[in-house]
Length: 414
Image 1 (tube, rainbow, N blue to C red):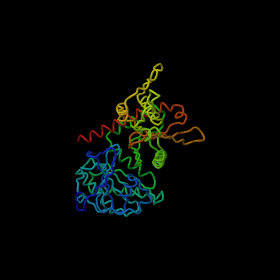
Image 2: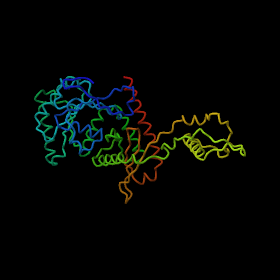
Image 3: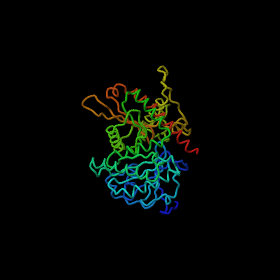
Image 4: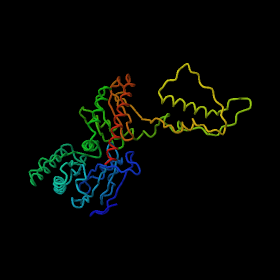
């Protein structure tokens, strides 16, 4: 815990597979600013803690800087700052941050938030010219469509005019405005665009998606972060809001009900091993008696081993006869089977968008513990070339996993 003029800085960590115990990752820092009750904390909680939007009303006002860590393609550290934070009271130079997100309530009086925004923009120009500057015009759901567009335009113009009044050199600053709300998917779309600028490996992920779409006849595919429902990459075709919203809703449904389903081959019963206690053989038989449960488990183990090796056994070779062993002798083969890791299970799902007529199927494939692939496929293609699609997914998965592995190694080596 460190101290700043605003008080001690608290750290709220979310453990992910990217950050193991004892490892220190270099995290990409995002600064989340805005006036009191502008919606900063609700944005963070809805995106990264799956807080229902209707419960954001009961969130306490942020009194001290809170650091939230989140692991996706890149490890993030989000600084949620109170409304009275200034450049001097931040407690860290702006050069440490990759992105600054300033949240403005669309119904608020604009003078005070714009003045604070201009203050941080001027400081960032001198301390960190490469800082990504993003403005979220938030709580857009509270206005009608015409008023929403008009207020958004006014905020954009006033910020630009204030910067020009300070100095003409600020006119060239890349300042991006987003109209957002926690009650629809505009927030996920806006934060996804912010995240894209922070991923150095984004071109490689997009190339993998382009190759997958070409070989699978998919008109559109997204690589989503499963928990936050932010798409970290997509193919070269344009993103339309209807398709993005559909994928977000489908992913939310699968996150809600996915825990109710499991794979029989990946269930704990598959990894259960027989007891080492074996009843003594009968005097009338020269072959040791094996309990039924033990034999069935051993058969399943042999079957899984043959499946994992993917090497067909010759049809002419007969099964080897059982060999009698002393009861005191340990079964080394069984011990090796216990140590042999099972093949990781990757879940998948498919939803037909037009069940009455052959139309489009939305497919879901797990890529890593954090990332999933959502792709639109023509239903005849999905039904007729299912094996080819699964084959393409395997190669796509291997490419993404290799990119994530290189990203982690690079951050650990710094």
